[in-house]
Length: 251
Length: 271
Image (cartoon, rainbow over all chains, first blue to last red):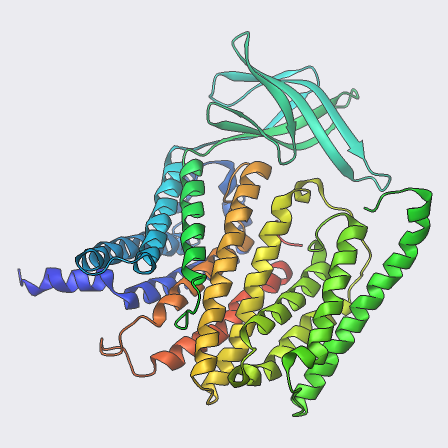
């Protein structure tokens, strides 16, 4: 093999022009996707009802036409991550051989954080779990997917405004494994109940035909969520440190 | 909402009228600024301009509305548009203070005026907040996103000025607009992700709005890299022009994300 090929490949992978081109590909694919989602609601409506890998394995492969944009999105995201990793690997060697300054390191801290977000999201997309639409009447029980837990709605409260919209609503719940309570709490909007990596969220509520209130819950597990939070905060800190030095003229 | 003692209840209608007066005065100030700029009349200093007065009135309007409604005035189309206008003006005041960048005020004054004028056509009644929006993450997510949008609007004006023969100062300020906007928008996305995780069970939901938000993020992330492409690396000599063109075009990507998704596409994540 021509010895120049690996060098050219490395040069391509570390290139800023590659970054710009992949960014453009991402934008085009995403724009096409936003239109396709509205055009094929029967295909995309349940995307959030399961983790992405499961959904894509089932529908992305069987309907490659309308989901072509997702291939573009995944390809460009993956290659952008490789581009950022290679760029940082190359530049870090140069930086460490020369004068190491925080200002020179910060863009690469942002690259590492971006990689952290992509990898953490991959973890969630592969190993997460979605249990949507679990309806439980007050005093009743419902199993939570394949977790082996059973959710009991102990009490539901809603405060309605005179105009008829809900001002706030809450559900006191208990989580059982077999007959043993393993977690108990009050679930409100923006305040889920967390247990062993799962978050239990109140989604909706109403009244049964016999007048008892019921609440609808989702239970989700995102194993990459903590990684994404840490990487995002790292990105934000590095970004702020990068833009705020006094006297910058080359922003 | 404001406390409901009899004294404050009697006062609220006056305060509501007063805050709408502030809105109309700020709109008039922005209109005067745009009119003067388009007519070739430039104030001696941006701080002694109708726009500066408009920003003060606008800030007061937003503060009073926040007190009256009990939540950050960023819910619904009216509040979104008026906050967008305010952020455009603030971004302009941050980036276009030098003499060399004042030419950008001609297009920027129009970009400040248009959303405020659009807001003027919309129902301005105070509305309660949907429970999911009743969290500090709402104000931080939306506020930082609009601050980013404001910088991107300034980028359109500065990029256009540079492309029409503006100097290095316009180029540097346009670069800052992309970088500051990207930073604010990124921080807004982080806040939005945290909020979504607590409210909807995932930091990411597949809706056109989310997809377009990431498009904006990737677009400006790539844009901030353009200036580092070495000219001798086979990259054409028009790097700066491409960068400025992309900075200016970024505003339209933002407009599609902000208004286009809500008005043209079906998305559960809109106003």
